[in-house]
Length: 239
Image (tube, rainbow, N blue to C red; front, side, top):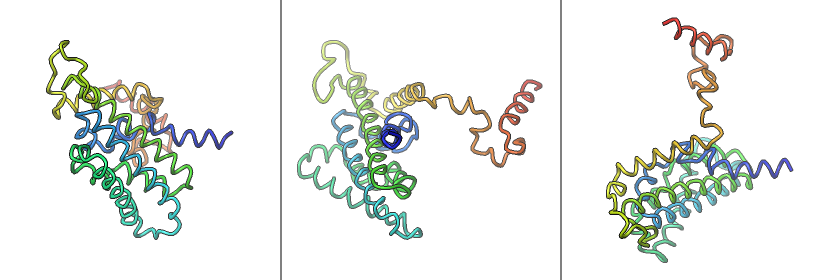
């Protein structure tokens, strides 16, 4: 039972709690670029998910074979192989999607989400958890792209997947198809994800314990974060 819960956690964490885009803020360039249409968003999301799962699996299997000094070049080579497979498949069966995604499809090779999961997770864990980790992160990435794509296409063009929805009801708000509109929708979704996530208010609740500079802070006495927080609040009150 514990193992099943652990495996479920490895899959589910990437959907919301550690969503790679909305919580870890990775892969934002591709996210903002391809979400002008829902079809582009889901195509990019599925392609990235395939690369995530496959690269995580291979890197996990080879983690004890790859020398530590060349692990990053090795990871990039493995990822590039699967990106090439995806790109050739899309070019063969959906040239319109390939044209719409443009340079962002081959740039999956250097997507921070994929390289980050390879370095931080797949290279340190066994096969099944690594596959589930990649799948969960891919689902979270795809869901975020799809949500942004639907919102931006609906408000910016009045359609969803090319089907007219708002025609005759309201004029399209073109700015949602432009970078400012993308950043606006992105910010709104980050705020919603923060509210829904269990860790939405963790830094405020933890005080100094959540500070990345806590280890070198002169006020942090003997690792006592609570005493440091109390002292800081006292100084603020006095000032």
